[in-house]
Length: 135
Image (cartoon, rainbow, N blue to C red; front, side):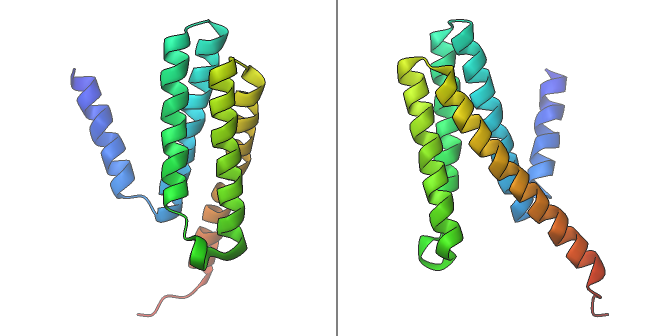
């Protein structure tokens, strides 16, 4: 019981101290983890767990969709919406038809997007270290 409370406190502190980009990466990590767990459950024919995990992943992707500013985000926001919609559709299809290839497509798309966000975070940090701060 003590371990769970410690782990929960650690996660809470990580979220509270995270930059907006780091929070997005955390959401991607959670979605990808649930997709992988859902796929494993499917392979093991644990259909209840598969459904639960894939729905958790879908909820995270829906949360990512809800944060998009389509009006002001331009082409980037529109493209992200299309990719997130693709991921949701693949997860739903994989869940309904018990097909791992749909889940694999969703995992690959989210992993590629996550890697882009990680690169953005690296560039942001590098730029902030180069930019002199006012005293």
